[in-house]
Image (cartoon, rainbow, N blue to C red):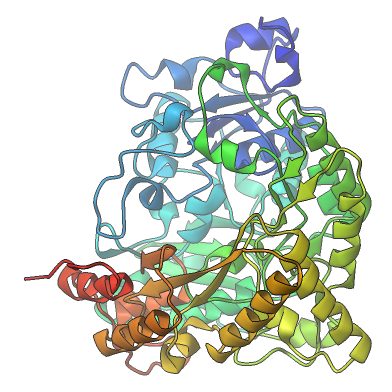
Length: 588
């Protein structure tokens, strides 16, 4: 065994035997390389189960093409197989917005493409079910979470059924998995059969269609897959319920969707993790390193986050094209300052640390410790966004707790600079709170962020310039970008800095026509912005924007929305980003 290999969960029988184990309780199959870090899902689930006293093994990126020895090597575990297909949906990972095959994979050693199949949840579970027909299989992660009900697959250009109709798994965990995986393991340990675990929050399962109950306050019956295939408005109407139930503070409603003779039952989510619960997850004994099997190889996704610290989960921005709230929820689960500082201290002790924290952030960098002032109002709320169409009057947007974290990290002797690399919601920091003290703290946040925590370039995401497109995106008016740019320029001038403000923009988003892109190009030309951070809209499963793109209807109004859906129209819009190039490509 490699020196220190006992610090990792075993990835081979040899490593397992070196630990003195004669069996494994759980085997996790991961579509990503095994990086023992809280940003990698398989490591989080593995460490969570290990903390329960279980023997957990990980099989990263198993070879599904050969004699399947990777799937056989640990034999049948005592409790279950787990499938963590990867930190990205496999089709987003494999294909561009133009549906071209990518030549790299950031979650694979050396950035090599081809180490995972399309739809690993389906491929891995089919193999495991064939080899071990009696062993429970649990699926989780982004791919399973976002495909738990009927969904549009952009790369196949068709409406697919719930992934439970294609993947022979016993249970699907959606959202962040620590709480449901603990309950599943506990109940299996207590002797319950996997078939009895029908009521665990944040899980989905197949049931006979005849078991769908009558609609009630606690049961929403979605339009069936067959109805959605026949009428796109039915699919659009479903999404409103799915999104609202995914973003409740106190969920208590079960969703059902029929697929022929079978149906999918989606149990409600857990309430957001408490500070103690999220601390417990981040404080697990991660090495924060790739497994020694990858020695000498670079894993690009790890390089991006190796010296970063995530301070919270959840996002209440509700952007139409984003899956964060669909997976993590809109309510913020924040770590304690003590837990954050412990992780910063661990980063400073890494052999390659040079004094720079690359990111003190989260899904949105400046939502730490924020939430509703009156939680009873939050319990009744079904709004998908706390910021759109205007900031909720019940939202506490005080940046003081975040400023205290920045100050504490800056005071650590080993830290030269702590940067914020995650996206910043400048509209949140600039929104009036009704409290002079909070507004003053928020102004201080903007100034401190720009003066002390920008690594030369601050990336923000206005996404577009045109009001009707921004409204569909659930983003603020572009006038706020001008105001933030004034603050940015003023702070830079006062501090003798020459930093850049880098905006993100999206082309061919639902609601956007070519003339809207022409106006965007004209505005950015006047600002002398040579755009770098741009993207052609890529429909991904279970976002509002994707539902509009596929159906042509807005799920909340069922009104028609224009969408550029063919490659020629999408390419024509994208070319407006590059007004500064002498000979832009002409589409024929």
